[in-house]
Image (cartoon, helix red, strand yellow):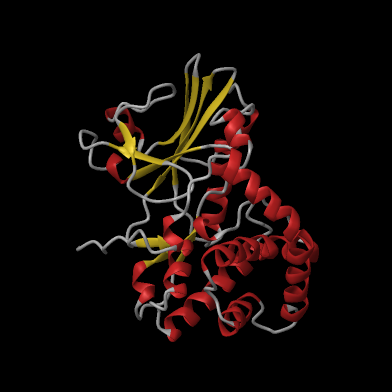
Length: 313
């Protein structure tokens, strides 16, 4: 019997290792590489900070690790907003990374691209738990935050940006049709292939599924609330750095989200109303977060970080 009930629901191919301090769920195909890298239920091995930019720190294995392990990224859970200042990376519940693993596997089986989870881990730490999720790196990709910055700077041709926005709408539609309102639907949690910035069709991956869940069906209000979350994050960037999306970009998004044209007008009005109603509260929260929460500025919006060069294969 596992110490956490959620471990009984792990997909096939994963097994659990436990010590008095830690719990590790790992896929059988990657277990040997992780063991050789020194990563276990209560050991990090040779972890170093990743060069990838983002709101939350990412880690990877150093050069001494096996080549396969060097393709893995480790996201250490951290609280958002003011809680980051109070509790850092300690959590009361140990089950969150394992629930994310289960949801990620379910979305992959439904045809929604998300990086496959290699391992999930919880370690006892200072009266709580330190939580990790390890995934395979999505090569030759950037996140939507970087893309919006490029749009703002006029670096994307109109046909490319229209293709990207329409496919983005389709991605969110697929999530909602499968009953999954991403708990943190925002540009930093959506990756797109670098080649889409030129002439290739866009291919998206959804990442960071912590606190997300699935249900049989979403109500209209749940859909619109999730759309409003995405819009709020884009609007926040635009307020800080200048507009990134045109009216035609928004129209392309809703063409992908509502290809039959039955609900997009109603959805758009609801999104705008929710945004305007909550804007004052969100601005106050953003201010407090900047003052007390230790939020790092995002260099992707201003062009102070470059997109990674595509790998030569």
